[in-house]
Image (cartoon, rainbow, N blue to C red; front, side, top):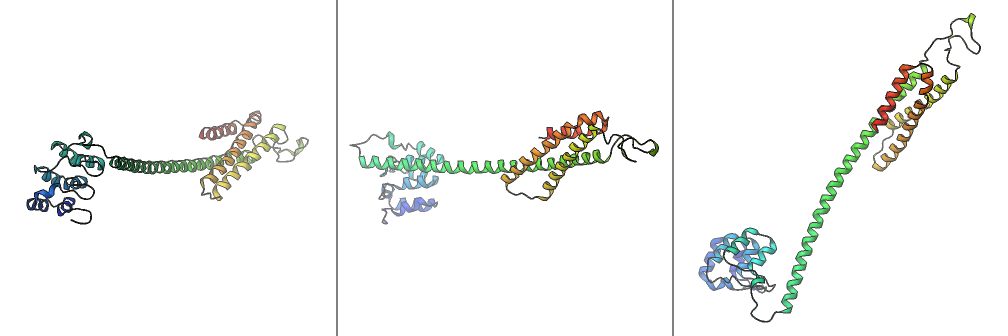
Length: 288
């Protein structure tokens, strides 16, 4: 025996060599029921290690004590159920190995043993709870990574969409300013008051002036958004959110200005320009 009170059979029961166990039993059958300092027999050891072939070999010997209880109040079946090995547990049950709970005590109960068993059970339960908590934390962290990735992709898509709409608004606003519809002053002999040669006839009208101011502001805002999106590199997600909040407000302001001067554009019979501006506004609004 070693300092733990274990015999050669105890040591062999931990391994996987069935022939060695068989030879040790032939040499000394009484060693089957020898317990170590913790009260574990060879059957306890083999069951805890999950050595199903060695467990069968030990149970095939009729002298094996199937009701042996160690110092923690466990039979071989209790030990297997604690470590969670259903295959070995089924073998033990088929050979009639009982649980310590079903064995009637021969005498008075041992309070110290009961306390030790209770502490062991609590320790085992706490270990299981901690392992379950760690697994849950890993799953939550994995879900958080996926959600952050999806949020980042959505934010990038929103930035790209806003840039495209801003470019379209700037294009239409630029064309609206520098492509004045209607006729121009060409006859110097019939020059209206306040007009110069080559000037559009509607240039001095109030609707056109309001249209020009609103359209210029919308053009400046959309160009500012385009320049910001193409030149500023933002890595942090929080900074991207703040930048998109500002850009979103600017784009809404540009849409409001464009919507405000649509009435003046209609008064000036700019039907094609009105249609293009309305399409751009609807594209941005429903894009958000």
